Length: 256
Image 1 (spheres, helix red, strand yellow):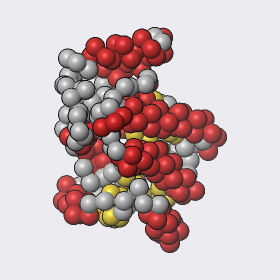
Image 2: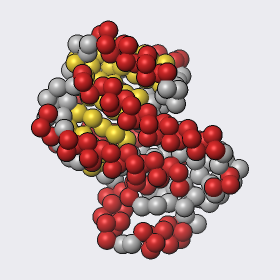
Image 3: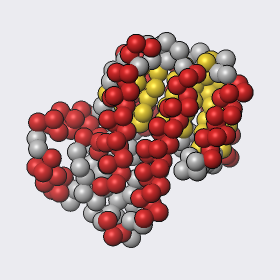
Image 4: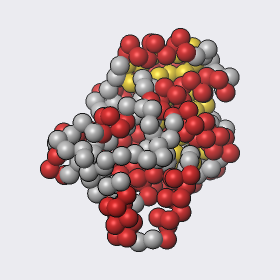
């Protein structure tokens, strides 16, 4: 049974990945994983591929026992894994709760790694993994510090895993988009005591463009997908400009 698995599928990039994968790939099923079951079920009317809804909170470690049992029972041929579950919070360290910090680390880092580890035994040559990172992975970001650190972890993990899997013919792509205007990410990130540290989100992308480019880059086997001009420029400049100077530039940009 040819299958794709998408986490964070109830909204934003995750649901857009489901839609475009359904259009582009010949699959028997797409497994969609997220907390909100009603949204997962509503996705079926938007895609032609049969969906298997798995409503789970990936910050709960018991969720991976459930997923592991389903994988063992069904023995799918997983052609694609998209780890799109994640969230961020904007604010000073004192404005973000310890619980939010822990949940960011759990969802953005541990859950992505645990999903990858669970699914890899069911992948064959030609399969693809897309780890949804962020352009924030390329440098430290004050007032977005925990989120940026989690994405730096996922980015480095993806780059190293790609090399480990070259011999198996499984391609891993770290997807590093800039702000995306038509998802819930910005709205969720601003729900803190004081989110005014970042005032505007100029040149933000659209989810359909980010996903289209990410899937194309994944098919090409690229190690990193920077789906848009801003994140491409950021990736290049961050390689050459010291982190302290990049943070100074960020201090100016975030006040725009």
